[in-house]
Image 1 (tube, rainbow, N blue to C red):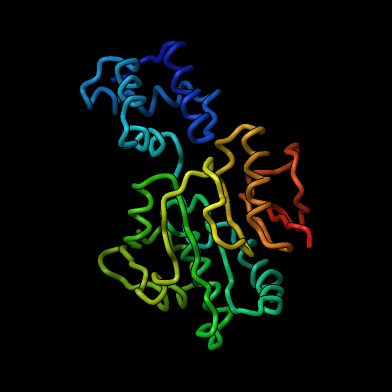
Image 2 (image 1 turned 60 degrees about the vertical axis):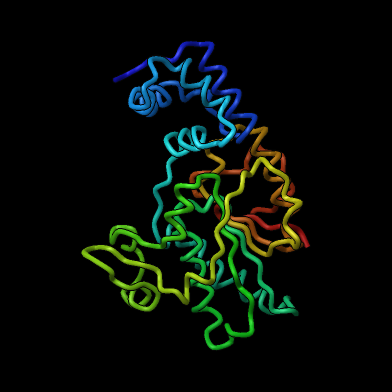
Length: 272
């Protein structure tokens, strides 16, 4: 059942999502109607107005989490934007492995979706450090706003089409086949990633120490320039001097006021 959203309710929903989550819905009216109409009808609502009333009054956050899940694209796969991992191996990790004296390498996957990015990063770290990995703390922090995708990430089970860019050697080494076209992350790799819910609009002050590498790829496509600027500053401040910031290849910080230095496509660095 297709429903139309009127100007008043579109403004209410758009304003709420912008203020609460930084998500820019200015040009997403058709998307909202297309992706939420069936959700609303299935839940027994007869209009967007009734639904939005309940969303704004819902203290549990479950209804707005459903909106986030429906309106943001969570599809990802292992070894996505592979050039970033090659840059880690060639440049970032050799650099930081020499500079870090306490063997505590801090990496954050912000907007981690269903976990493929974080687990790929963990594989890269395991391969890079090899036998010396035991003396390093390389636990990856992986956060997302959506409880549903975080549940999928913690489960660590994936369809085979998500693994197509992983070499057969890595697939065998880090995952196990648990059913037809169904693979699961092995426990020794799974323990290298800690997943948690986090809204990027919240303060980053809760992070006890600064990061050496931050991934926030294909997330800022949902934000307007003002939100991108605010977020770029927060990420910059959350990095150690010389730290690296990775965004998606379809994104850019061009036109957004920031202090980063671009060192490669979709890779930025904080000054030392």
